[in-house]
Amino acid sequence: MNPKTRQEKISVLLSTEPKFRIKQIQEALFKDGVKNWLDVSNLPLPLRTKLHEKIPFISVRENTLNISADQSTFKALLSLEDDLEIETVLMRNSKGSFTICVSSQVGCAMRCSFCATGTLGLKRNLTVDEIVDQYRFWKLYIEKNNLGSRISNIVYMGMGEPLANYEAVKESLNTILNKTDVGITKITVSTAGVIPRMEHILNDPDWPHVRFAVSLHSANPYVRNKLMPSSYEDFLPRLASWGKQYLEAFGNRNHHLTFEYIMLNSINDSKKDALELIQYVKSIGDVKVNLIPYNFTDFLFMPSTEEVMDAFQQTLKNNGVTVTKRRSRGDDIAAACGQLAKKKC
Ligand code: SF4
Image 1 (cartoon, rainbow, N blue to C red):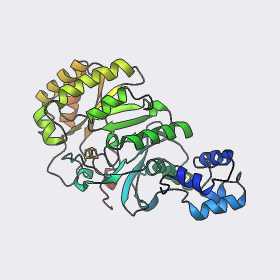
Image 2 (cartoon, rainbow, N blue to C red):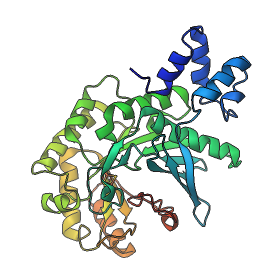
Image 3 (cartoon, protein in one colour):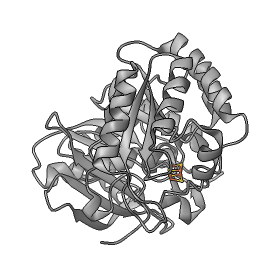
Image 4 (cartoon, rainbow, N blue to C red):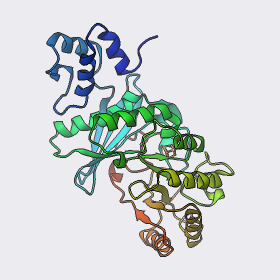
């Protein structure tokens, strides 16, 4: 069998080397100031040269890079070994460090009707290396451009449904947690709601308990199904039952469950929608709701107005629901939520 992962390729290439060399190489991938194999100064030069000639130091190549006018958001179109492309985003966050948004698949099969990525269909899953290397790509970019801060947060909210690429996403999370200084509560995996996988996570000892966000977008089964065709008849009761189990097993102050709610004009932003959402959330427990402004792509939807969003938020607050409103960033370079679809600005 041909080696597929970087780890396997290294093991085959260096099969006669002592074990500690492999460990040194693994560490070097995440070391500050190491831009390529030749920079790994604790390896003998012939070994560095061998690696340099045979194994790419990083599995993604920069194709296009756009920077928002306010210099807060950077979107990269990356090419993979087979020339397929993905997008990944770097954003300055309120703490002065960086949050990155990573993709987990090329395209997506979920077809959410408000999402640009959904129009691409699914091309393939990303490998562990391709997910982890989005972190490494931005780390190298920050160093090269002296942006002066570190990556503190990671959201799995780029192209693709992370739980449809479960094993690779799980391994990428464990690699990042083991090799970088990004903490477990600083990573969020966002899902459209793949219930069988979510149930599996409750009992998977290898799944690291990073934060979890579920794209809800409506507590009304008819509306949700229109927005997210991957939804099915008993989705909402199953999600509620899963949510209760999740909160019982993992819920605490640092580890809440979030429902994402994209605000669409006259679709899911009325008082009635808010009351349905309150009733649903309260039937589960201490769930946080994150309201997301809709970022116009090429679709039929319109964003809710600022006033409507504020009123919606206030209704939730008045009824004891913890609710936040996400600030939209990078929409001038199509880097905001729902806009990742290889659009070259
Ligand atoms: S919102 Fe997420 S799950 Fe839905 S189509 Fe877009 S990338 Fe896929």
